Image (cartoon, rainbow, N blue to C red; front, side):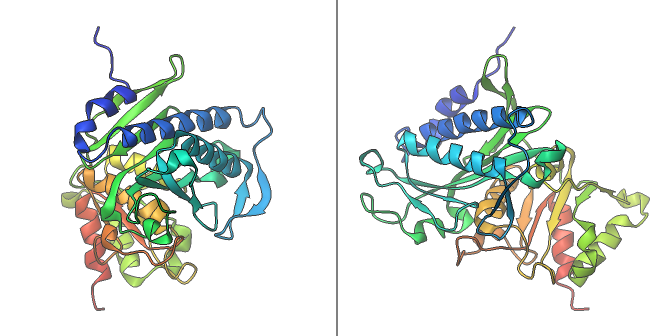
Length: 335
């Protein structure tokens, strides 16, 4: 009986994808895998360990932090710091980036941007949550402290991105620019195994994911798209099915596997959009494109946007190409 490839084996086998790396990126992905396993363990025992609920603090976004937000953030920071393969880290939970300038980080080439626990408002009701990460090569001189510019690179500069999804099974999905690959965690063995090689969006789907409670605040083009998706048209296989979990990782994962489109537009309640460009939009866009889908801000490729702020927000549409292009078409109509 053929044994499945482990995540560690897969990473090593594909090191050739990084001609400029000497194992650092491999070690970095391994550190993310380790931290994800620890966070997964804490999530699974959250009720017993009394780490559900709110922490009584707000993050830099003005959002109330869950206790697991803080725990996941600390776990990823400490695990990545210990490996010595990155020179800096930015987290959605922290106002500023962290400089790693100990001796072991002196020659590190990479910076990491991370959303430690996406969808954390769902923890107390046992709905799927996740972790999103993005990796860039630094642009500041090696041997000097990292700067803000290292973190404000366009998404097209990413060398790797991915997410962990903590659901009925725990998965790690990542890309390094050579396809999007999924690995399922086997708790009995304690390893991630390749279960979804070369994940692909279909050209067109039948699911749309949006918080329709904000409909009144949406741009006119998005309202038109939603009405179009709800219309009866047997030739075009409409109406679509509406599915929205409120956890980006969960909605994204379902849409990639089943075929769908995710929308988080700008509106009067979120004039620049709600999702963070660096921590959510860019990594998910990289995964989307590598899986044959499309990611947009409604008017162009979102990974070509140049961030101006660490916690910049942006409108975000990603999924099957046909539906994302339909969204762009509706948004760009004059009337």
